[in-house]
Length: 253
Length: 275
Image 1 (cartoon, chains in turn green, brown):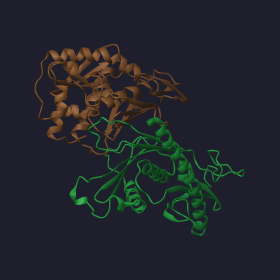
Image 2: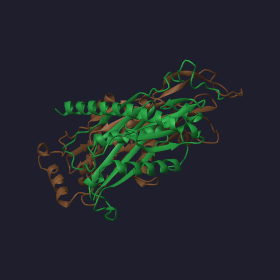
Image 3: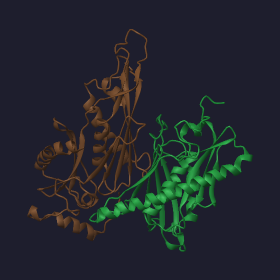
Image 4: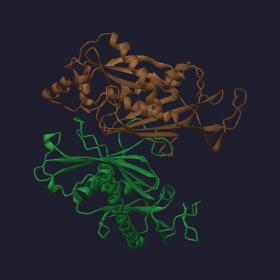
């Protein structure tokens, strides 16, 4: 038993949420309308997502012509992802001198590229590249799910064609029986947990990632809780995107 | 950055700015000659840092600055300047550029010199006789479209003006007593660190000076000046020139220098108050 009580008998967690309650989810879009800027080579939409204390910025470049001719694919677009976790994102500053990403980040980059090359309708943009740049400003548990949700929102905001919305959520297990949705960093540190992503809020799991020791007999229930969380999140994302774009429309007019 | 323009485009930008009558000159984005690009500012938006700012410029460039404070034991062998160089740490990263890039090093150096020069001879960072605050200023530039020094220095200025420091509870004279300073658990106080703001001024011909030039203006300017401005003290050194193109670069009349300084002195106050 760790020194924290993660789930009290009254059904409350450390931060006062219920077991199946999601963190505060807020996304916004920064558009800089600058029609007279000739040097504008990139799209200038930045999507900012705040999921609990996770703060993530995503910019999407493209679809545009690739700089390197060898990267051209005649039938479809190529997708690249870069994740930049800033040094000040944790409470204690990362003292690592180099700016090179660590192994976990490289693994996430690969997984996210694999995931989204099935989600984006790449055939509509032949001979072009779409690059997704993720910047993490502040992290608190469930970072991977925040990144995936933010990329989905950014793709919609940038009007890149996608088949369906991908939502991700992290799930943890307490005392082999309670399932907690959308963990914070304390819970993530001490509990066995995993991330689940589904397509369009259905039961189709498109990404599952489990960290450290995990009781295999609980996996069925674990997936169920994750899928439910994802379908709730899908409605939140749809509503927020609608609101955001209504605001944008009002600003333009 | 590194937007390539064709010769025709460049000469079009150049011709619209080189005219005999100044009132006929037009900037490509329609700004006034001494007008900065519009900025959106979000102060203190990261809550695990002591101070932070997000500035979004009109052309889409975003500068995110965070400042973290740590405690460091003074090294008495070091001179004051070397100690300050150790206390102020600047780390700039632009995702497209790799770590040892000359542009990054030049910007880091110029920001660091600015901060250190204002701290020399003051005891702003001193906590006790033995300990000082160490500042880690991390700068992140996303979507970088032109030379970002002007935007970064405005963001650093805004950050250092909203950085909160822990409040000391124990005695501040610990030379004779072995004691680690103790701080209040949650109370923080604001210590304003003076920091010069850097303005980039592009020179076109004898008369025309443009503040905060955009990429197309940098590519066609005769020369560019980097001028630092401090609240109250007006323009401070170092003033230096910088070039961004090979085609149009040429020398300039030294009288332009004093004109540029006067220009910055006249607009500096207003810019700093707006932040």
